Length: 258
Image (cartoon, rainbow, N blue to C red; front, side, top):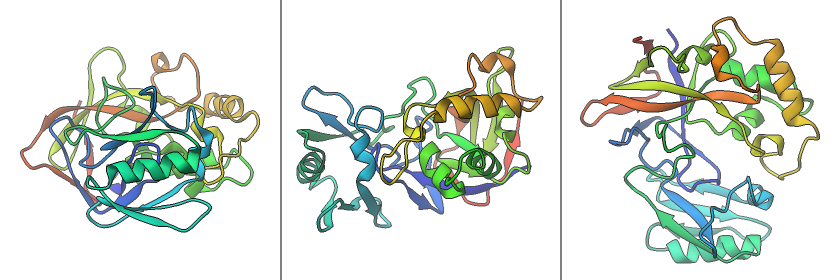
């Protein structure tokens, strides 16, 4: 069975992620600190790569506590302590983007993209490598930044993780560490992967080419009912059960339980 090779959390939704060796699992099934903070505009809408491509030009690095963030744009870097500096952080981001922004916090479960699947997203390194090979100038690391998954496993075959998707007959369940997750949908990708993760520059026809190649190499184990279109990659998850104090650690084995 595959093992967990990488854990990435995104303390501020839509900004850079941070690789960690272990992560506590919250009662919601989410990883502690993942998407804990979200950026909202004056109308209360998410400021993210779907609506604001310029956010991809901002760089964020975090300390070991994941509460101290250093932000960089065209000027000098600025370091902020959360939650104390939440207002100042939002002001800095807003000035960089030319927007009025505020930061909001949900320490109990973060701000997942899919409320029905609040667990971590999961992908294999082999899938990232395969998808990167479809585009000139895109390597595995760049595809990883574009897809923004939380958990990365070392499965031998590209798209191995499609096995974990809900097949519509019974839940597809798997365990990692002290957590059992239900695999839900194969994640429908948005406009973000079409753009360079550092500059926001788009690759023309990215989504169409991605879907065509994905359909061409779709493995026999991929559930066809998941594919009303083929611009999909990585698995959305929801918790089935969670041991008290459960942690996921790099090196944990993934086991399919149903």
